[in-house]
Length: 161
Image (cartoon, rainbow, N blue to C red):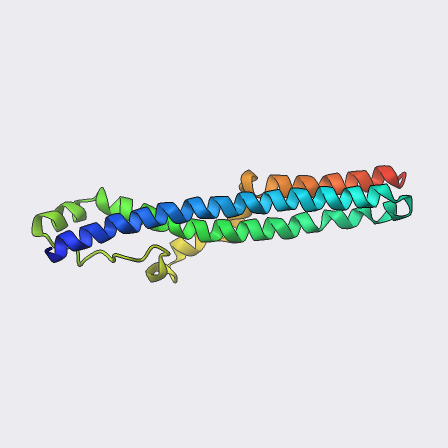
C-alpha cells in the first residue's frame, strides 16, 4: 500500500475512533446524570424520613453541583474529539485536500491526533473546551442546578422560612 492510501485509511480510522469516543463520553455523561438523580433522591428521602434531619435538607443542594462539574469534565473531553472531527472535516472539504489527493501527499495534515494534542496550545481549542462555556449548555447544567434549587425549596418549605 502506498503511503498516501495508508494515510487516507488512517484518517478514516481516526474518524471512526473519534465517533466511538464521542458516543462513549455521551454514555458517561448520561451515567453521571443518572447517579446524580439517584443520590440526590436518596439523600432527600433519608432526610425527609427523619423529622429531626429536615433542617439539613439544604446540604443536598451541593452534591448535584459536584456531579455537574464531573459532567462538564466529560463534555470538555468530548469537545476535544469534536474539535478534531471539525478540523478533519474542514480539511476534507478544502482545496488543500484536493491538492493532497492530486499530488497523493497527505504529509501536510497531521493524522492520528484524535484528542487534538497538536492544537493543545491554540486559543481556538482552549475557548472551545472551556468549562465556563460548557456549563452554559442546558444539557450540562439544567438538571443539576434544578436539583440544587429544589433542595433549597424543600428545605425552605420544611423549615417554614
